[in-house]
Image 1 (cartoon, rainbow, N blue to C red):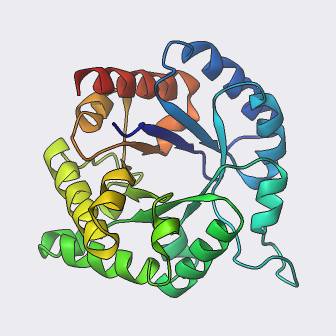
Image 2 (cartoon, rainbow, N blue to C red; image 1 turned 135 degrees about the horizontal axis):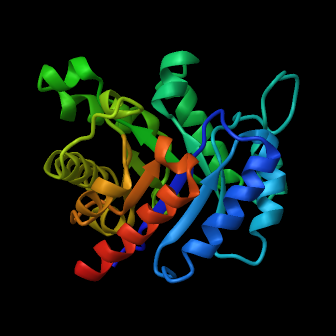
Length: 257
């Protein structure tokens, strides 16, 4: 059985003090869910502090983005080696907000994926359809276009470590959530596509999260789906009580599997 991964994407939120307080509350509330892998993705300014606060715990550190270069004249960027230096395990790549607001295309995301694997970081690759694509019944076409382009130079041995986050763009930060059936359909299609690209063994091992207005109220239903192996949580991850409730929901979902 694939281990479920519940990751918090804080986006551009939380000071150092906020971050430390969050971790203290969270760790006290997820003691009884050892079967769930948990990761926190704070802003860059809080990575070192959160990493230190998490020492000795089972919660992993994640970054929200990175540059593909090792070093150089890239003002405002951060390298894979810098993320490893603060003990990051995961890095979120290809988030729709990066694609939409910062012009990141699939070629750039592919270069970042390559750099992540070369630096022993596990990428959480975000893919998802827009509102227009969904209503044009082009969800699968959009997912296939993104995934094939993002993974075009990724080798089999690298793909086995990949995490994919299925995040319908229309559901991110909107309060709208894909139904458990819709979320499962998207995740299943992505798994089948990974199978076509890398074979059935890799497809069965790759974890596929769902992201898009995940809350304590809907988490268990979403995470009980056969092909959904966790959640990438945005807004609800800013409150440690809500995020802990989602982790507990993931644990219940695993028991019912």
